[in-house]
Length: 256
Length: 257
Image (tube, rainbow over the protein chains, first blue to last red):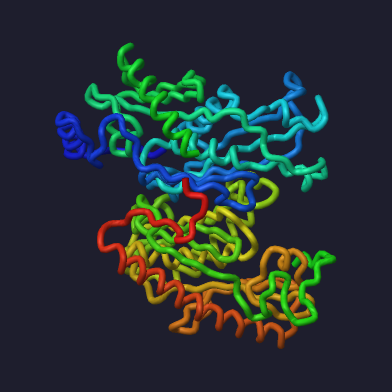
């Protein structure tokens, strides 16, 4: 990714607002941006969703293709998550093979789905040990205004929830809905000037010292986390972030 | 042209096509300008079952630098298909087909942009095909023109683009996927309505001279209509949005949570 600079003026502006207890878009520190989830957006995908989280816009498509299981999990489907931070979405994204940033987004989303048992992978077996469904979760970022992790996670959850296993097309029996078990919803927070902000915009991300993504389940349990950037959190900050993630996660889940 | 034999009846006894269209009838086309916030200009096109997004960045510093032209701007288009845009998952990233399409769209757009106003810069056009159903390069070029205008790039005119082709020995406009797969010819075209210039033209398959003439005329007529829809999208964009861009959603979006 190209080096992304931010003017001192903007940095000061954000800091001054935070000192007054508000943010550039008028949100509280623990408030998400407006969320819109539109499912079945792409007819050529087995499941899909377009997510708008503030001005961040992501399309997630799920494709299912018969393939070989991994030798160590002969009775389980295969999950593959891929993110494309295409140049359309930001002047700082470049074409070409995935860079570290898109790999991190894909892996964090993958971890949430996998560890949160979003899908009953055992039901994606066609012939044990020989043939299973390979589930591709492809994340396509169209407009980047921060917090790709959550926009992509929400999109993945919504796309999986509406996906149909295309068994008839592959000559493997009748189509059936993807066996979805859980909705592991992630909520990302950043630390700016010692303050914890959920769902950061691009400008907030650029001045952030540290970032923490927390995925939670219906039970309120945590299923995946990822800390990023070179700053640090205190123990108390982490607890607050997790508490926010549980509360906001269940709010988001009710809208997927 | 594939020309794969098919059981589908491409033209029925009433002279209508698989989806009920007349031979010279286009699929429904909707264009929305200014749909992305980050880009300098953008447009979203739904054309039949095609869903295509275009974004423009620039004029900005030209990369790679050795491509810089001291006399004019370089229009660099990048056409990309999302992996989920087709039935079989497409391997992400550019292939030979997308390189070729990027090149011909760049060339078509270069013709209408006043590139001499911005020496040494690059105007980057990104076309993302989200859902494909034949005719994505035409949809991409049509969207890209609107995105360039939305970005305020000075242009001679908008390029409109449409394809004509041949199915069941009949010349038809705007082939859908089923027709393209088993059709006899396909001819995408980019057209500048105010000057009458053709800035993109490809053909594959088999057409007689007479059929070719008919296909061209059909495309020209269609492009004039498309041009109106493009202009209307820009008018709506600037009539309703006096302020900076905010994303807009296609009017009939369904399943909104």
